[in-house]
Length: 360
Image (tube, rainbow, N blue to C red; front, side):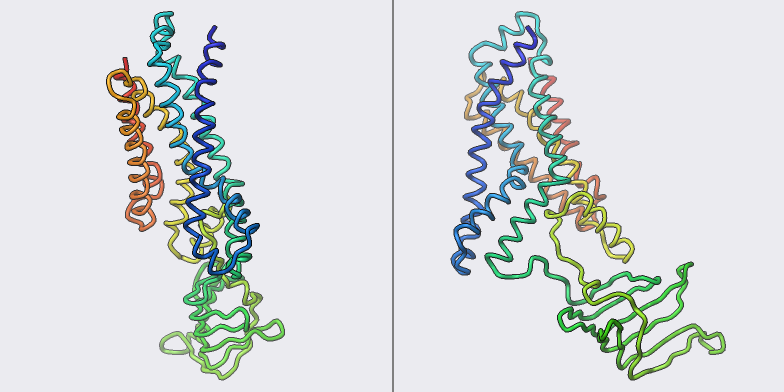
């Protein structure tokens, strides 16, 4: 009987859930289309490129609004069961309330697992392909635009490069400083120059100063100006081009790799660490919204359905608002990365638990 009950409850949920997903898919596509319509017209975009751009980006954006679709579907299905008196009949048969909620909770955990795996693997890749169509085929730009000014990069041989201006196409650096360190991270030498040209696989530094350790000098450092100086550096100009890839387009592994790279350079990693923790935390919103929706759905007899829907949706959007604020604080380094990502889950899970305990 329990298995039959589970199938019946799941069937009552999946039909409105499919409709909600379809509606939100249409809303996402229309929203992105009208948001980019000016660009489509200005660059005379082909219909095929527009359709590919919208379809490839749909899974990523749909994953973000999936909890709202889940909540609406549960409110509709559970509210109908309650109004028809079926929940009362189930309880009269000796089935506890928590057992009736279990199928919906299982769906929430399944959605959370799929969202977690997708957010760490294939969903960012699809979003990156969508952005590629938008940048390359529609706007005619490079898919990745590298930073040209104030570039800091780590190199081979314990070198650190500080580049005022990087010109990959012309294979040139300006206002460049190269610090070399030993295995113990102790400073060995610094070469600075106004211009450095990459010629025949080598770097030619021009109009600069070479500083290195010299115990015979009073300061312990010897300075030697030069007009031209060849340096044995294995990096090419393209190796210093830091890709401006959005965190939304990066898989879990890419986020970790970028974080480690920035750590080695001594650059801030708040944004990348927050993005990583958000990938872990946000999928569980699918479970939390179900716990939030159940009490409101079962109150449909005491209040109007529209009122209950409004309360529940307001609570759901308030969840996203708190998440956005905490994310902003985390990216600015004013809150630990893990806390900024998980704060909303902690708070609203507590609210949901308290509300469930009060359900008769």
